[in-house]
Image 1 (cartoon, rainbow, N blue to C red):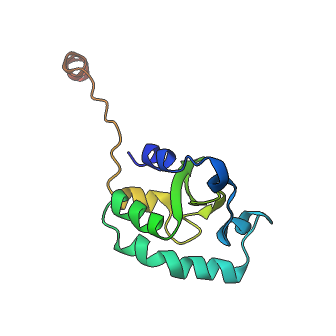
Image 2 (cartoon, rainbow, N blue to C red):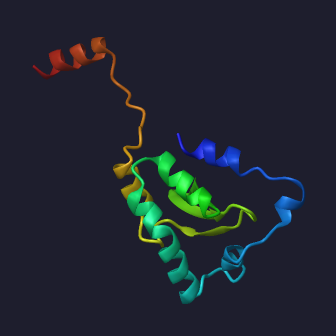
Length: 125
């Protein structure tokens, strides 16, 4: 639903692939300093709070030069120019589970065939 859209939008080639922003330096030391973390939270919290859909959130983050991508069970925030992973959305105060509940992430529901359900009901009686 959201992951493929983000991946499509983040493929950059040529000179644009080599650009860096202030946010891309956050991963150089494998940690973000306190001042940078506070600035990032101040910058992005309104987008996380006001978005009513994945699309609104994605658009708001894109306008500010970021995108999200799921990896290893967490939603990560990336710099849109350098494609550097900055932090998890949970670090910003918006864990992926909360976002998925809020935006009603659609998970495939596998229903048992009706014949199997009828057989199970008969076996229980």
